[in-house]
Length: 151
Image (cartoon, rainbow, N blue to C red; front, top):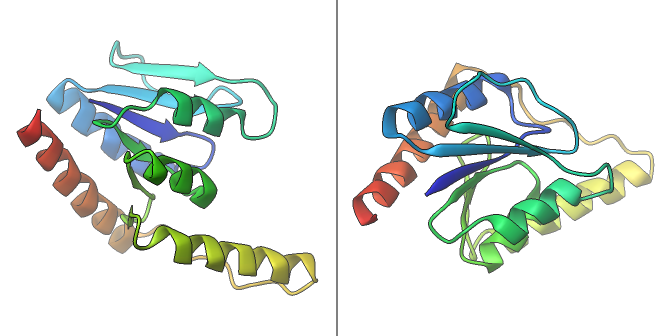
């Protein structure tokens, strides 16, 4: 099992929570982005810098993540690709993406993009506060415990 972090947009408090869990459980964490993201020096942590091409980090994660891994991303199209491969994916708010909810999430995302492209600025998502971090921690821990039990 490994943790894959779509590192471009993962908030620092979420990264830190994942890092602590990884150290506690001896699990490798792969930070993937098209630029270097700062992270602590630890043999369990690896930074993978992909090319600057659009979706290169996403493509790398899709090609290399395995069925027993856990991916953390807020990128819904990436999450959709991973769900198709039966890989567990959660966002930084603690939402587990599944076959039953990913299509709706994609539709909402596409609708919001179309509004923005037509000059209508949709309301942005809420800020990451204690409640959101707590919700992420609960979801993350639940999946981690299930994976540890099954390995």
